[in-house]
View 1 (cartoon, rainbow, N blue to C red):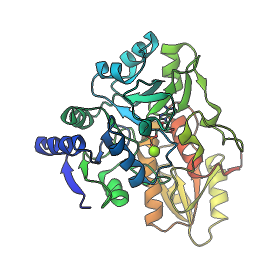
View 2 (view 1 turned 135 degrees about the horizontal axis):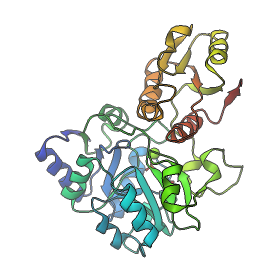
View 3 (view 1 turned 30 degrees about the vertical axis):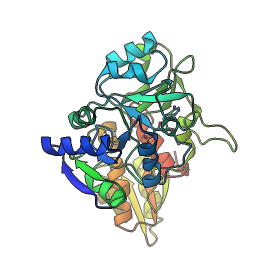
View 4 (view 1 turned 120 degrees about the horizontal axis):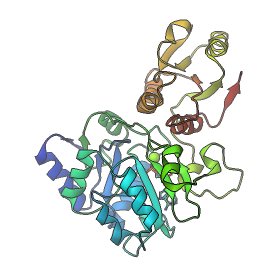
Length: 340
Ligand code: AMP
Ligand code: MG
């Protein structure tokens, strides 16, 4: 299949993306979080092509994207007042809520669950494509399953060229990690995946929020995942990523005494010069938003540089840093060296 390259700044290309989606095709689209691989959410056959292109396990449900709050009503059973309050505060934006689904949501979208995840993205091109398609769009991240999520159109092309109808290039994604996901199908609401909206921000609207244990810890053998995506190895470059938890001096000492062939460092900005191996940074030590924006591109670059083992500075799990930690610890398969 030829994959068309479209420009998000060009109205004709937005219209073309909408046409492909209405006709049951797949388009990689920019959003403020990461690039999504979109299909008509109301067309089970179109949605099943997403799973084939990504190699995504069939039991991992998708998020449905809308371009106006009122579009949520036909997709869910009811919209509770708390959902309205959350939407008022966090939509449009990097925030997803899960509610009991209505009958028009195909099983392919919800992966057989009785619930559906809904998001109203803030990226103008994402909104324009949903409008042009005239239907809600099911869209997981546009990477091959298991790989780091795409934050540039080039990443989507690297994974999906020849497998999807088009990619709409809207430049780099501003948030850089996937949306915050909470479920309102349990009481109190539960955070299933941290993202650009922090637990503190959620608390300010909800009063109380439970953090699902799978946010920070691996699932126990045989344990059921509340969010099926949590159980899979994720975000991984080919290299063996290992988190190193300690202060900068401890990290430096560790890396500089483990500089075997193929070892690389994934450090904070400005630390490269002290390291005696090839190093790549993913943001300032305290700048969690920059870390979120740069992490996935850095993980892809490690592959391009043929890293075999990557010692990564362990992000601080606070604020948006919680989302960075959640992604990086999965990229590392929960392997952490404690030096502190
Ligand atoms: P992705 O779109 O690739 O970022 O993945 C969507 C994430 O949302 C995955 O971790 C899914 O498991 C989760 N998700 C989507 N729908 C549901 C749902 N109905 N219940 C629980 N988790 C969901
Ligand atoms: Mg994903």
